[in-house]
Length: 303
Image (cartoon, rainbow, N blue to C red; front, side, top):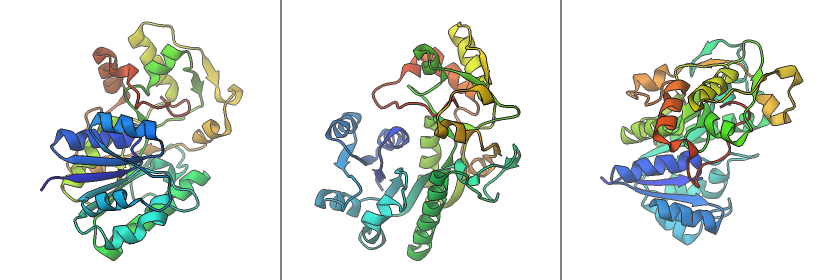
């Protein structure tokens, strides 16, 4: 069976998943809000559709009717926009559908004081955006229970890859080494997001999975390592309390945890980039660190 994957929200992670689908002989379609971005998707080999969260067009509905694997990568607001616009279609008018993947965040766990946690850890999200993610996760899992479809929740840590990494930040002069005692973050290379999604999709596996690297690390260490690869002096350390940061950037530092990826490994996934050093080494040697038009701004001070 040819995989026909439809991606709601073909952004940085969604495009990486689409590329993996196409490389394995499948067909990848995806949504975007702008005509310019639609042409970028087409140039990548995807079938683009415009979608602004309103009722899906007749063309989009026709594509969904043939979809075998559905990926959702649109952040929720007060409600999940995909469920709000297309719940009835997904539940009743997608006869070929055999798997759903929802891209979420490890932010749903909230703060655990730096302890190691797995998927069964208590979810106590701090930010409003993480609470919305947790609510959306539950809605998608409930849909799966009603329809009998396997729904995989992929909880992602700080995303980086080509065009979106500490090397780029140093090159632009925006990198900072903000130090908060005992603070660590997990990260995930975009290629490993795609690889994990493809494994779960191919095997039609449902459940909740942390898709994150092996090594939670202090953010200042990542900046220093990137500087060493580039042969430049790293920026000076700045104490967290003295750092000029946006409220959103500061909110990331209110959560401290070490997230285990044991479950996705047990499912059979072997990480291409198990830690930031392996990833940055590859990005620097290959020259892929600069990225292309699909690259987006990295997360606040994390990479």
